[in-house]
Amino acid sequence: MSEPQGEDARLAGPLAALWRSAAVRLGAGEDDAAIVRVGGEEVVLTTDALVDGVHFELERAGPEAVAWKALAVNVSDLAAMGAEPLACLAAVVLPREGGAALLEPLLLGLDRAARALGCPLVGGDTNVGPGPLTLALTALGRLGPAGALTRAGARVGDHLSVTGPLGGSRAGRHLAVRPRVAAARALLATGLVHAGMDLSDGLARDLPRLCRASGVCARIDAARLPVHPDALALGGDPVARALGDGEDFELLVAHAPLPPGTQAALAGAGVTLIEVGEVRPREEGLGLLRDGRVEPLPALGHDHFLGA
Amino acid sequence: MSEPQGEDARLAGPLAALWRSAAVRLGAGEDDAAIVRVGGEEVVLTTDALVDGVHFELERAGPEAVAWKALAVNVSDLAAMGAEPLACLAAVVLPREGGAALLEPLLLGLDRAARALGCPLVGGDTNVGPGPLTLALTALGRLGPAGALTRAGARVGDHLSVTGPLGGSRAGRHLAVRPRVAAARALLATGLVHAGMDLSDGLARDLPRLCRASGVCARIDAARLPVHPDALALGGDPVARALGDGEDFELLVAHAPLPPGTQAALAGAGVTLIEVGEVRPREEGLGLLRDGRVEPLPALGHDHFLGA
Image (cartoon, rainbow over all chains, first blue to last red; front, side, top):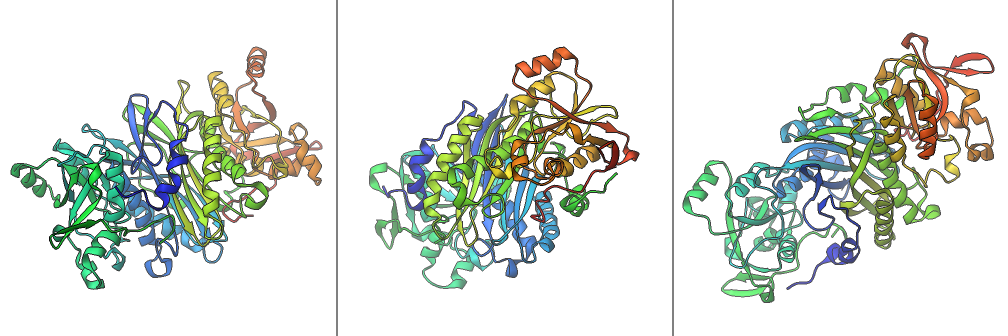
C-alpha cells in the first residue's frame, strides 16, 4: 500500500501519542471529526481554518462567499461522520488593513450559511492581526440512530461510490460547498454502508486515508470516474483532475452491493451514488484501472499542510 | 451606566440578530461561552484565537508556552461558566518561514497542556499561510450538578469578588494562564454565587459586561483591589494596572455575603476570594471608590478587537 503522504506521515507519530480521556471515542487524526461522549450522548466535533490567499481570494470572492465556505467545509466534516449539525463557533482574525469593514459582512454571511445549513453560530472570537483574513470555524454535531459513519470498516469486496462528479472545483465550486448531510444520513440508514468520508483533498489523497483506517486497499476504475464539467472546461487530463483537484466535498463510501430497490429509494431521496471502484486486499496496493491496465494510484491531490 | 465599549458596541446589533435553533441556550456574545443542548445533556463551547505578535511573541515565549496559553485561555472560558473540560480542537496556521519545524513542539505543548488541564486534544487542522503563527483553539465542556455560572444574575447588594491578584500579567503571567476550573465549581457549589465571568480584558472592561448582562451597575473599591506584585514591579498607577492590564484570567463573581464557615471551606479547598466591590442599582453607573470619593470607573482595559 502507498505510504502516508505529506502531513499524514509527519503527524502520525505525535498524534498517536496524544493523551485521551475515557470520554474520547474518536480522537485527533483518526477521522473527519472527533466523537466525544457527554453523559449519555455522543457529540461530533470538527475544526477547519481558512486563510485568504490559500483557501480563497477575498478580493475575488467577497466576504459572504468566504463565510459560506468556512462554515460549509466544517459541516461537510460533520456530514462525513453521518452527524447532523447543532452549532458552530467562529474565530476570526481580521487584517489590520480594511479588516474592521469585513466583520459585519462576514457575520451576516456566517448567519446566512448557518440558517441554510442548520448550524447556528453560537460563539466566536474576533481579533485583528498583521496577517491575512483567517477564519477558524468549529462545528458541533450529533449522531443519528444509525450511529457514526467512520473511515474504518471498509471490507474487501465492498463497492466504492461517490455522491457527485469530481474535479475542477477551483472554477468556483470550491466556494459554494454543499455539505452532504442528508445524503450521509440516507446512506447510513440503508445499513449497507461500511465506511465513508468527505473528499476535501482529492480522491487520490483521501482514498488512502479511508483504506489505512480500514486496513484495506482499493482499485479505482478510471472509466467510471464521474468527471465534473468544470474539470473538462479547465482542460488537461480529466482523470487526473477528478483524482487530484480536490475540494469536491462529495462523500466517498464503501458499501455492500445495493439492491435495486435501495438504489431507487436513494435516488428518490435526491441522493446520487456513482460507483467508482472496489475495495481490495491490503497487499494489493492502491490501483487505478485505466485502458485495461492496473497502474498504481497516482500521488495527486492537495496537501493542505504543504499548501501544494 | 457606561455604554458598551469597542467590539461590544460594534457587534451588539448583528449578534442579537443571529439565528438560533431551539438547541441553543446561550448564544454568541451573551457570555464567556455558549451552551448547547444535546439530547438530555448541556454542553459548553468556546473558541479563542491567538496570533503571534498580538497575543504572544513566539520568539520570546517558544512554542510550548504558546500552546499552553492557547489551550488555557479557552479552558478559562469553560471555568467561567462553571464547566469542566471534556475535549479541545486546535486549528493551527503555521508561517511559511520556519513553520514546519513548529508543528511538533506545538503539538507536544498542546498535549502537555491537555493532560494538565484535563482537556484532551481530539482534533485539529494544520495549514501554512503567509501570515504569523495563529492558533485557534476550541474547548468543549460539561456543566456540573450546580448548573452554569453566567454573567446574568448579579443582584443589587451582591458582593463582587475576584479569585486572585490583578495587573502586570505581561511580565509573564499572561502566558502561564491558570484556569480556575476547580474554584468556579467550588463557588457554584456554595449556592451563594449569582453571576460570574473570567477576567481576560481587565476588570474595568469586563465588569461592564457582567453588569450589562445582569441589568445592574457596580462600585469597585480601589483600596481593596488586590494588586499583583508584577503590576507593582512594572511601575505606574497600581490601581490602573489592576483595572486595565488584563489577561489576569481570575474569576470575577457576584455573590451573597459568605458566612464565615463558607469562606473557611473555600480557603481550605484552595480557593482565594478577595472582595473588591459591590453590585449597585443600574442608574448609579459604574463607579470607583478612591480616596473617599466615587469617580466613574475609568475606560481602561484591553480591546482585543482594536488590538489596543
